[in-house]
Length: 408
Ligand SMILES: Cc1ncc(COP(=O)(O)O)c(C=O)c1O
Image (cartoon, rainbow, N blue to C red; front, top):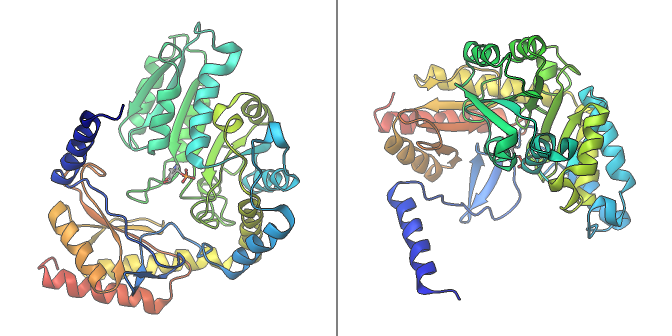
């Protein structure tokens, strides 16, 4: 029975979140996602979305999705091994693996599901998960929540987790050296390709060198890099000249590539086949909707047809980053369209993001525990769809509010 105790405990928890400043407010967008959105009847410029290429409401993506419904319907009403695999799903997987330079790829409903599915399958399901082996996983401390949660699905008796400080290749190397003769069955190094709080890139050349030296598998979650980095938008591997040389990639169609949903794992044929057979988050969760598959195919085509989108997001990010620095703000260096403006004070960050929104600029403020204590920041995210005028306006408002608050 739903007793008073449930209500009381839940309310206590919610109150605790509010007291700790961790209660999340969801702003209601009254229309589509884009460089300009409507909140509470007011138009504001959006600098808080992963819509890096502006495809979330691009006419060609919208049309592809709409047209697809007439042919393929809205949903598939089951999973692929039960009610049938769409030809379009196979086409998208083939296109994706060609794009990423891998042998094969498998679609999941989200990148989150893909990460959960991969680690649980490798550690628990190989050789029937007899519990007689141990695998070691080496993970950057700032890896995404989906990777952290993936470890929770790996049976404890099968898995040793070693968390290295963010980007600290020396510690990772030390761990690998220490573990050299421990008899682990597999070693897997896992990293985000781009870390979403800073926009920093993982050191893939060094990670690959260490993986090779220690016969470890290298897994890169490229959620924020696919459709953003590299000459053709294939992500961090392409950016570093390592296209096709990363053992396993995961990523999403939910950010640069249309922004709906849909995740994937790409890699060697046998890994993908194993996931199709044994990955529970794939096997027991519905197929990606046809409209999303068709629009994702379109997104990959658009990347080829309009490489200028990649240049535009890069130029826009550079323009904003340079402008914010010139104003006197402490801005993290980088090349990614995630551009953190560091205020290092949670209260000031909260106040500033509120003031910016009042003046028509929607940007997310991040503070502890989302980022380490004392490193609160405004995380601007730049899109190819932003016009120079919109970016100039953001900089103008940033300057006004910064001065008003005595920050610059
Ligand atoms: C690095 C990383 N991995 C995975 C995800 C989850 O992606 P999805 O929304 O497709 O589940 C995100 C999104 O926030 C991410 O930043």
